[in-house]
Image (tube, rainbow, N blue to C red; front, side):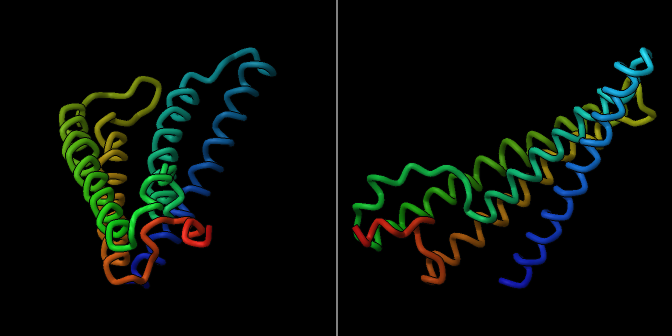
Length: 167
């Protein structure tokens, strides 16, 4: 399970770097054509928008996998360890349910509805580009399951910053 997570983390890291580099290149091209050539590129703003969405969702999944998301744990950190574990698993379950319903199911429906819709400015269809939502949702669900199992097995602290016990 740990090897699979590390591989998934690495794939997401590489994907985020590639997407970010592509976003920079597309935006630089857009600025160059607009400011230097006085003939703005018609496709670059559309492509930059979709790259940004994919980058944002892939980055969100990666940060969630690294437990780098924002958490207000002041009250939870005052609870006994067993209660901390229960809250941590409950939070992971809520996040997994949200991701499954909104990102996976909702994103799949949106992608399906717009599958054959032509994208203005590019020879692409909108539907496949909307698959970023269900892909990110599946990754977040997998990470939520992984973290829940790790917390239950005591291989991972219930709270990311476990400095609360030292105070």
